[in-house]
Length: 391
Image (tube, rainbow, N blue to C red; front, side, top):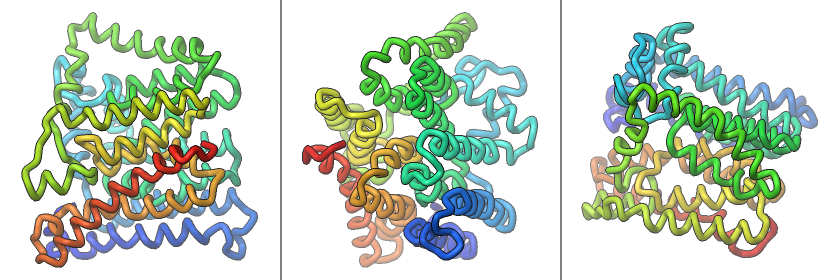
């Protein structure tokens, strides 16, 4: 968040911040309110409509907000794709190859608001896939629909992570119906329309697939081979996204952030080692225990959110299906998801001036402690899983 926003556009700043605590309160009490108790479909649609459509109309419509990524990345890539450009060869992209053409279709159909509508539709699809898999009254579907960290980042910043979540939720739905090949196709589509990071997010399904692993991998290989094979034939440098993201260190509310800002600490590419080792250790241990994809995803998220050199807060939306599914059967986990879903969106506010000392020493201390707390709280699923409790 721009630290000058409180001075230049205070209404937008307030509209950006206030929905977070209000949303958390709603998540905690909505299903017990008169008229909504025992009516999961009604409370679900009311929640989705108000937090997505209502908030978007306020911020993007009434207050005239335009997202930075929308202007700097999404619209230029969409226009380049509409002009016939080939990703990586004709224009730079940090995304999977079909991301820009997909944006192009949205811009062609709806103009500059197209990417936001696309991401909202993906968010809707992810929620409905969870409903189809788990039921309208499931804690998992509610966790996705109501968690502030899901709808806040999707609407406030018009971010693309809901595309990743959609593919994961469709894969989960297919696996629940014993359709491993179809689940693999959903994962393969994710590999070609989202971020290179999707490869990591697909891993929990592979680890938990058991005897269906071959069918899952076959399904995933088809769209990936077709799209990337075509790009190779077009002489496109398909590894370009990895080169565009590899130099970041200490970006986002990880445990690296405070020493980076205050001390200039920088491990460079070696900063990935603790994160990847912790993810690998969890994958091995949970696989031995026969854990499900949701447990693998929860461990993976905690390790990434605490130790990755780059963890933008909106990345949590990609792991949110796993977190909602993992938290669903246990009250303590649901409590963690509620609290974390509130504090994570506040990271931008703590890291946009307060921690850097722009508003005085007191706010700097609050910023430092707040960011450290957020990073440590991300590790709670690892503590819970490592305790040996049923995952």
